[in-house]
Image (cartoon, rainbow, N blue to C red; front, side, top):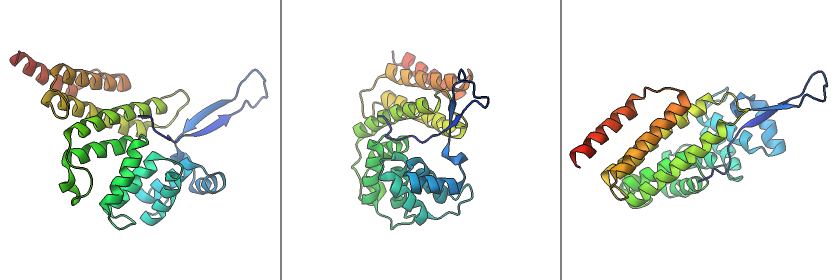
Length: 250
């Protein structure tokens, strides 16, 4: 599941001495590093979807000098969503789920959530998986019926989306994305544990302890390669418990 759009703003540095042998260097940074007035200009004059998303998020959370204003946030998020920005679509879905800046409406929540998930949002993928696990009762009769197979399918799609986000933000020349990477790392830990549980308990797929162990090891390896930490107690404990269970049932 490839994300439609991932925001990063490029800044090109050119050699000061004019040496033709020295090539310009472009670094990429989060839109959070850009002053608000510059964001507004970029959004209004150049139709910059990343600036629109950033403005929407600032007004949504009330950060980086913006006062929290859900209606203003939604105005910017809708403009970003018109350009297929999946993370803007996810926040619009959340607005309808919670009644932030709009009247609460679960039908519209799921319309926007499905659109965001189909466009590659890992956040929406997690939410779709949870919705299929919980069923209509959790949303006053709206949304999908409980369906463990769809829950499992969306867990798989979410894992793919997380890897796509991670690959994008760890490319050479990308700077200051630590906050985003931290969220992705935490989310990948959760989704690998969730997929392991699907296989170990046979929920939404055939019970398969080897596959359950595979996802635990994959999650552990992802965390280890990303952080350099070899002592990952959470995964080590889960792996040990599963191996003990496999041995007892052999």
